[in-house]
Length: 152
Image: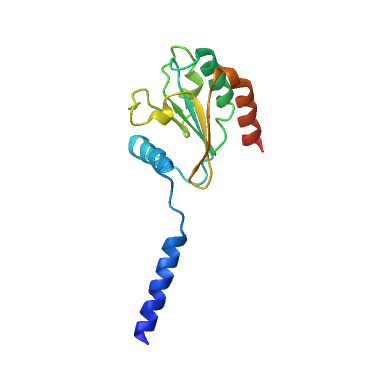
C-alpha cells in the first residue's frame, strides 16, 4: 500500500511540474534586469513596459513617443524605463514619477539589446506578448495601436 501511495504522489508531482508552463528566456531576461538593477519584480499586474531612449533612432519619433507614453504614467499596469538624459527629449515629466519609472542611462547595450531603441513591450501572464519598436515610417500606426490596446 505504501508503494502505491509513493507512486501516486510521484505521478501527481510529475504531472504538476510538467503542466506548469516555463517562462520564456526573453521574459526571464527582462525579469532579471529589473530585479538586479532596480530591485523591482515584474508581476502579473505589469502589462506594458515603455522604453524611452534618445539619440539611437529618429529623434522626432523619440520625442513624439515619450509624450504619448507619458499619458499612461498613471496606469498602474505600466512601467517606464528611461535611458535618455534629456538631450533630445524632455525627461522632466518622468523625473516626477516615483512608483513606475526607472532610469538607466548606462545599461549594457550588448547584454540588454531589448532596451536599445524606444519601444513598448507588452506582457501577458509573465510572458512577452508583443514588442513595438518605434519606427519613423510607422509611428502613427504604432501610437494608435498601443493607444487602442491599452485602453481596451
